[in-house]
Image 1 (cartoon, one colour):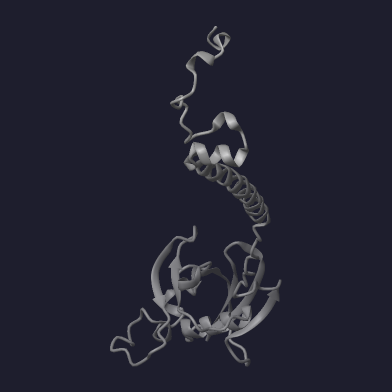
Image 2: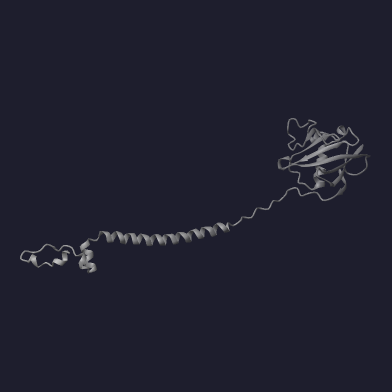
Length: 222
């Protein structure tokens, strides 16, 4: 029985790769499982193989089916039911492997390197490994909150200005109130309070009977 040796590497980094050997009568699900082991992923998400041409253009899709009770589980479109041999039409057949499309999708290329005779070892197996695979889940650090220091300073200044304005307003209000009180005081009362005779009010300025009008100083009328 023939054994296929694939070179499997990440789409964006060919320097990290694994060489995987698998028997012709094994399935794409066997290939999926050994790839997960080779790159140390957790195998908890959906995955697909695409039969592709020399330019990695995707063709027929072969999906991973986790629930084997599906009525169409025997279809060749599922990994567990599709054997490797029928799809190896080219001596350098290429496969596109996509994993976890719901969270950004990891894409790897699998290229057939050579066909080997069978040997008494357990397949599939990792025959060569180079480079460290990327971390499956990227941890994003939470953003640190920025304290609005400048806004606090501005608010303090505004409060100080408000206090100053309130103080001046109180002074002006007190002055206006005093002026209003002064206006309401009768002229006679104000004269008594001030002691000024020239503001006297309430006295009769007419000449009483019996006074000699002729005694008035004429010069007062000049």
